[in-house]
Image 1 (cartoon, rainbow, N blue to C red):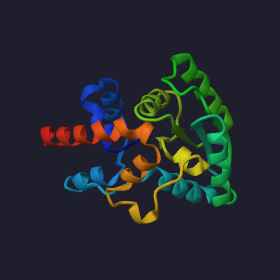
Image 2: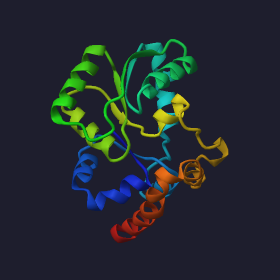
Image 3: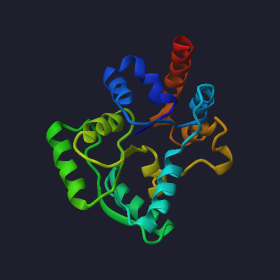
Length: 207
């Protein structure tokens, strides 16, 4: 599974590895209002926000005893994310968390991590390594694990409290990115200055 926002789709034309990962996924969901608006013309629903998806799945899984594993974020972020989600959904089973190096993972690292996740008894693997690294990881883990594997990127920072999420009234407005850019300009300016126009050009070209 992948959550595809405008930045993700802006990379597809120039990143064959990402394109293959999305093409072979069981499910690609529209993440972000611009992608959802375009998707509705093709019959899709959305947007599906990563932070909300994590919360909803965790809450819905409590009665069934689903185990959740969190992989990603800076040191301590995945652990704190699991702790806060457990407070949000009492009874949540957090079976493990790992904060790997923030870079593409090597095949041996993927195999070792897959074994750790499988041994934990997890039913869902959440990944937060940033786009497109987390999307590469989903494709690599898919052949090793029999469970939903969901990349939710910034949800790790939002749920851990490491980064403040945009106000609810901005959700679905198409302007949530302006809040994120204002909060983290040095990290995100390239993504939005170049990524958004590339996304629109790509949409027009493929349309």
